[in-house]
Image (spheres, each protein chain N blue to C red):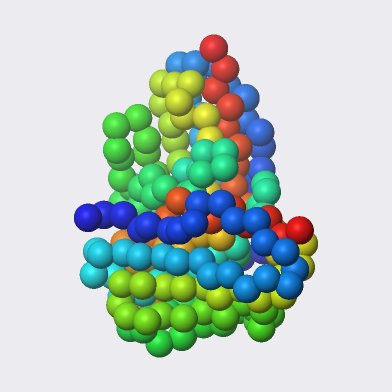
Length: 111
Length: 111
């Protein structure tokens, strides 16, 4: 299994809603990441988990809350988002210096 | 100055042409480099790693010049299916990778 699976693929949520994005990989990778990508821009790093511990938080607002329940799963909990948070949210995993494997992303629209 | 810089393009080339992209990086501590390909509204996919000795994969050749801090990608015999955005990536390798994406170079191969 060489995939990173993200659900849902599309999500529309109101500014008062709470929702979660999910990411799963079974490649034994010990580093997992959340990225945010706006149109025509490169992915921007949000969070890095290494061995299930949060290693990097790139000054992300607290309305985004990551969680790593185990070495295969990564969640991103969303609460009270703003319309400018609408973007493609990408999960990735890696093991050593071999490059990332990205999931297909969740396209989020905040209304 | 951005850590990883690319010419955003677009590069419009005819089918069968050879096209080259360059990318410069400012962090001399970067250890690993990659080229990713991203199709419109899709996730980035690893195209190839980049080594000082140069590496080739079919029609694609990548090269790293550490002295000048630039990375190149050469595509020979361009196909319509090569149309995409090509992202240059530098990584500080460790237990996890702190990766910096370039802004991407858009390639459009025209019939």
